Length: 185
Image (cartoon, rainbow, N blue to C red; front, side):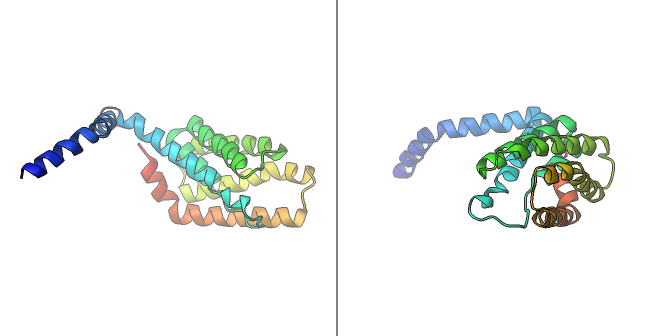
């Protein structure tokens, strides 16, 4: 018993700072939960969306899988246009930097994703699956001119865009409402 008590004292002194941080964190959530949860969710969305394009460091694929538009629409619908813009623009810049693709398309993507965020906020009362698919289509309608203007391979670009629309449609139909419900304050 004496040994167990001594061991408990060692553990207590070693992890006191961790316990105090956890207690402070839980207290902050209890007191400011409506502010803390959106910030944590948005941070998670930015990190996940940014790393969703990381695979492009290892191989170039004509299939365009990314979560930036999905999380931008969810953030805009849940928290408003400023939050959607923050999630969308941040994840575009970080994702492109991580995958080594900071180029002229980055600005076009940021403008398109910001418009998507504003529209997601403006039409937040719509069904999230319908809204998400419509905004992904709107995004590509907005940026397609620039894709072709910058001299991209038309066949590759068409396949790239089509796969991204299909993947986002799948995500919004199957997971959109659940992720939105988790995100809502």
